[in-house]
Image: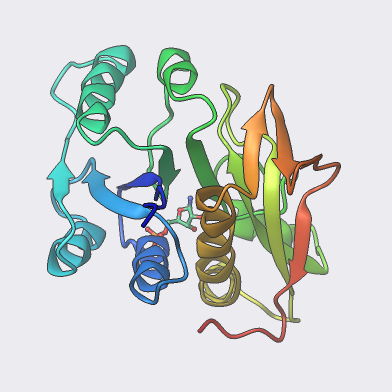
Length: 224
Ligand code: GRF
């Protein structure tokens, strides 16, 4: 019987790991056709790392050393990732900016989720900015990582309505529950199954160049 190749997946986290939990959940349910090879976390106290361990996934902690610069850390991180030979590296709340050399080394394999409707609100503090600007909708984007922060080609976005009187904290929680935990496993499933990939800086989806991100209205959606 022919063996089907399941691409290797490594997930990088720093914190609570709610996106990681959604990825693990999709994997356990058989929806994500990848081999979840490892979780790498840069903080010893991250709740997400404990969750990964409890789920039986090889979990490695790689804190930055005192006085270490970005390139030095990224060299150690790359060596650790290489132990698992992943085809996909998912950043799931990994709160470090990556060096150009690192991004180039893993080009086409690095995917991130950002809590805004990119290209709006790159960087930190998106939820507060959405409210301050009176935006009618907020969302999250799954994109391939390029050297410019939060500026790589976007594969999938999900959005929700912003209700009157919403707080940044409430909006962040709703975005996580209704959008992020839904679209990240979905996008990774497309990449793992070969439907979506990065070719020469552009996303190919089902063999065609993707002209604009795929968009899902998640206002009424609840995550499985
Ligand atoms: C998420 O909002 C993600 O979009 C951002 O960092 C947060 C991580 O949360 N990059 P969690 O660790 O997945 O709970």
